[in-house]
Length: 96
Image (cartoon, rainbow, N blue to C red; front, side, top):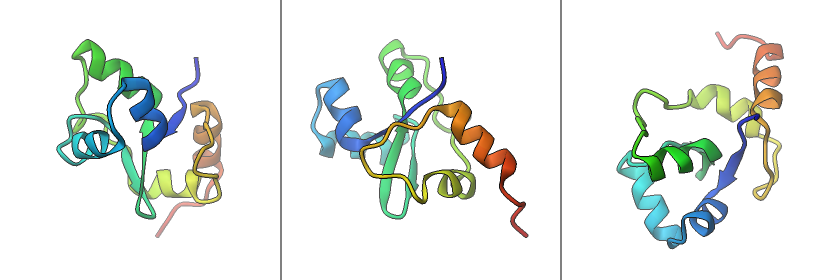
């Protein structure tokens, strides 16, 4: 199943916590995510990792430059399949 990215509000709803709590977890690296243009995005699989106690936020951190290229033109409430994001990253020119 391709990986998708959620907004803070979507992820909070899934975990049945407030968006504030979810942001605090992201800042504390309790939950894996990336901040793009001031907005957090959370991989859907990170919610399962958190629930199962198998998360390793530092080891699985997304490269912000790569995530920025993928999410730059994405609406706040969009789901992004990982294979689509990876294809966009592979096609993007290398930053110098």
